[in-house]
Image 1 (cartoon, helix red, strand yellow):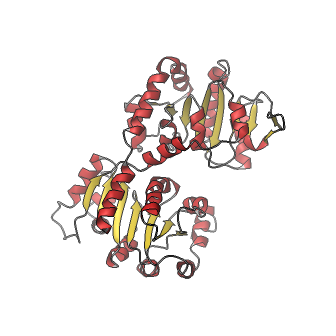
Image 2 (tube, rainbow, N blue to C red):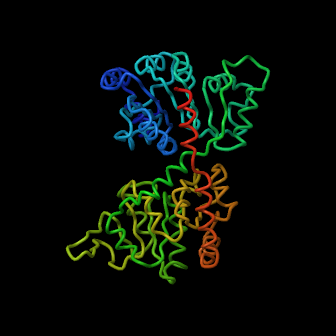
Image 3 (cartoon, one colour):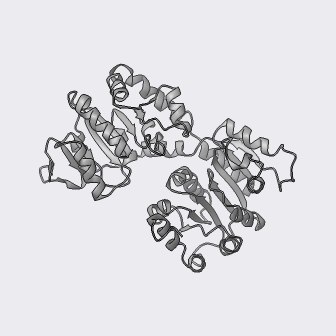
Length: 414
């Protein structure tokens, strides 16, 4: 109903048009044995990606099927080479879920975090598929813990194992299976396993992916702040900081906006005055220097109008600002923390456990306005090194979730 006026809903609908016949045809090219992973969107994919890559190595005779609920995940990762098939998950009706499971007959099914579709889970369990819930995080206000959440509790009981990110989630989910209500099909094995995203960001940091030469030329040897996944409110704050603090002290700023489009790039450019460059406008010449169209050659701000670079950009910086904290919530903090960055973000971070823990250990701060942002920046000279060590220690101490899950799957399959 929303698709005529909502672009994302339209993409969601069109992507599922005649989906099952298309999947049945593509199934012919896959191996007989299937491992299936489902992610809600791009963030959950990044959580599941280390596990998917480990499964590829561990089970080379299986084909890997990766499904998404959201277009924002599917459209970006539809060509991901680590899976043999990337697709939308069909609508969660009994008929469509039954047909999806009949087509693939997965031996192993992995759901990431919380995108739990009751009919797909039920049909997969009935077919004999061993189900795993990975990177689970449970809050007290979720439907699983409500009097009317029996169907959702039954869905959880279909899993062979549930791997929780934290001990609080383990305690909450264990309470479900202690309740004296309608008997649940089975009691899954509940275990702690750190979020595989920690393994993912450590892998990115160790891989030293190449960055475009213009970015390296722009950065030079001076101090740099990288602002990732920014929204307009974040950029307003950064523009104030640049005029008050960054510019006089010689810092440069790289901005990687959440929305990459020509219109958004132009709006962002206008906020920072004349000394702004855009990545797509930088060109390396034969003398290994760069020229800039429509921007000063002495640019202090570089706007990244290209996807896929942010995680590697953080390694260049001396401080990081994570966007989204003046809207629905902040974006990925771990991509910056793994490089030992002192981190700042807006006030809406409470739903994100890593953000809360990074604040607690002294690696990050939340800022509500330009005055707080300036105080944090001015204090970097005295406290930046301490924040850097805290950030690195925080990430490294939480590695190993992929190994924990893989060891369990290996034991179950054997």
